[in-house]
Length: 413
Ligand code: SF4
Image (tube, rainbow, N blue to C red; front, side, top):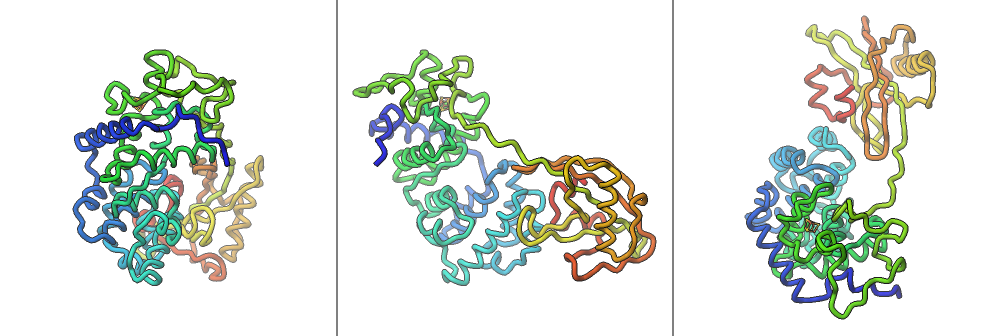
């Protein structure tokens, strides 16, 4: 069995845990943001509806700012107020509503899971974090804990990016916060801390603290409701972490949760010494040629051709202008030729590379890809018969384009 973590980095004093819960919840009651899913979770008497609302909000909030999510959440709940309604939606409708929110597989998986609940679980949401994680595709440990604690009152902790930051600061954890060893300790800690009578509020309070007070760059420590429990704050004020009764300080260099000996406490950083992460892998660099094909529609308004991406992989099932990934360091002339060949195979008629008009480049950063779209346009005079054996395609007006399931990157194009 692994050695127990050094007590300095734990919450082992029950009186301190009680005081921290009290202070944090009192602050939350005073200062929490008014968010539509919170209102619904607090007022909806039906447990399945509560669970569904929290689930939708939690999936949307992954990697996405609250301010962006509110609008999408409200539209989603208006269109599909229940699991049953969502289970009947088409993937196309889901993608259309999700367009612009990013990480598109989230919407797809949410809908698949809703279908599963309706068809295999008699429309009843699982009620515990363990079952939610086991039975619902796309529901990981964090989302399961959030739904179970907020909707069903299960006393189970949650660990997301905000909680990682707060806990690492509260307990001066400076080892790599993305390592499994540290993440496991943080889950243990979250499960110890969670308030037994108000677990959902406590978890939301901890996340709210990370989102609004204990923020990454300039945390508002003076206003923090738990500063008296915060070892990083104490260390910033007094130059060292507070003494813990009956606990020896961590030995230099061999504590699995302290900062590595090669990167000790930097007093110019203060509490932002924590958390620490291993350096991220640089994003993959990609270039894609894309062509905006335009024709005059039957009512005289311009129309543009969009084609559907494959049903798996990046931006699965979304629509885009005909596009072609390019090898790096290709000469412009060669890029043009390859794109012309691609369009030709598509349309079954010759496309002259010279006819493609270069418009410009659009850069879009996906989470792990630095994508450059090299944008061309081509005006088509006559009608074109598209090869039905290739991906689905359709002509759309500008308004229809914006209402379609297209990514933010394509809107930039
Ligand atoms: Fe975060 Fe500062 Fe509060 Fe500590 S005192 S939890 S570092 S905001």
